[in-house]
Length: 337
Image 1: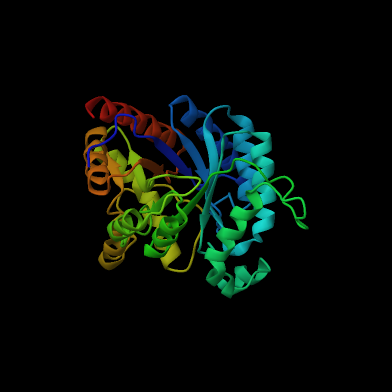
Image 2: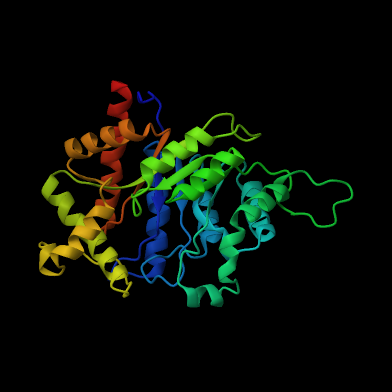
């Protein structure tokens, strides 16, 4: 598929907490990156809900969205995503209705089906494991709360009713693709950490899409990891922070985002590295030329309508630089389209 000359690029921020810093600094970095992304012309800035993860500071996702939206002026801000099984749909409608009232025309609501945490934390969140099975019904209920209330409606979302809050479905499998297609919603695929069913999900989504009041044709966004630096060697070194974070998670010991290392093979077995690197098969890691080649390949393979980049880089200045490089490549790709 030919790339559009105005293909949007966006940012997914997990509000990483690097080793040697604090949650306060991580959240300050998030706002600084959001302002940087806005100045570079990125389209939207999403934050993710994860719980019981020491290296991620965005658990109270709606609070951080409000902070970022208040500290910026143009960029769209939203969730990538809110894990709906953790919440009552009415409360999400009220929270995002409030955000939309405060920041009209700038708030997105991306919804995920996974709880974003472990079973013990699910219980601590006062939800139940079976709530995942109600995801489709909860999405439809959430849509209802955003509709204008009827005169005899006993329960209303205030704020929420009648607010312009575009819903997105997020996924890493064909389930989310099928549901997004059936409901006529935009769909975002998490290829930055779960690439296995990407191509199948894209096909399922586009083939089954039914137009809705929100969307008249399929709109697919791919999220990939991006770690760009001036040289391939420096980018690969910066990327070892992400590799270490994923290794720690798979070993059952999640922690703060570690600093890069010179030799990742010294702290991970070949089998571990093979598994982690397979996870990053769609990630763009390297110099501007290397990242540009990977972007072209991913866009061509998926026909994505939008590209979202997640960058887990320990050094904040290097992270800002990575997005600067990405913005420049975006502009070059547009000129070539």
